[in-house]
Image (tube, rainbow, N blue to C red; front, top):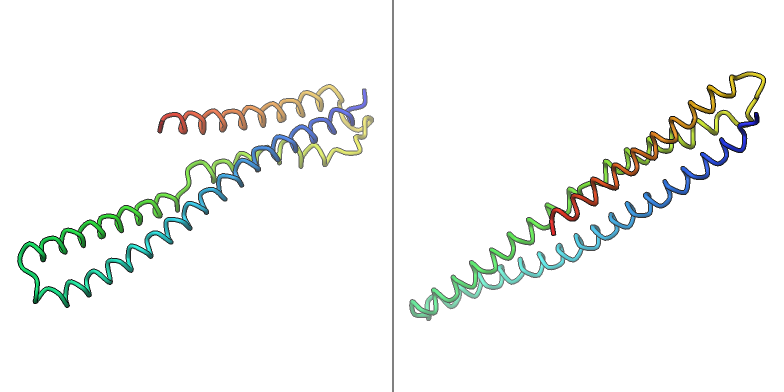
Length: 163
């Protein structure tokens, strides 16, 4: 039995799955990066407002009554709360969930479904036990599939948990 076609199919199938999952991961990283940039821009705007508000408060505090001072302090507190909220969002986006584990899953799938099988090409049928090699290759291919689908299941569960 010639295992070359089986090996080629395993390599091609794994490469397609890795490309799809890798595309999702890249899309997620780009999305998080865009959100991060938007939050940084908002944070800078708020920090500028806080700076201006503090200057105005220092200048105008001599002429304002207690109510005016309290209003300015309340506005400053509100801006500082917004600043802290955006800092928290930026910090949360700095630690994206599932991206690192996704890279590990893709690495594993590449090793067991692409790198190792490609080392057997061209397949020398007189050198190896064909049946044992077939079972070994299928075992590693299936393990790669299981790992990929477990990763997708866990990520989907985490996504729906937050809704």
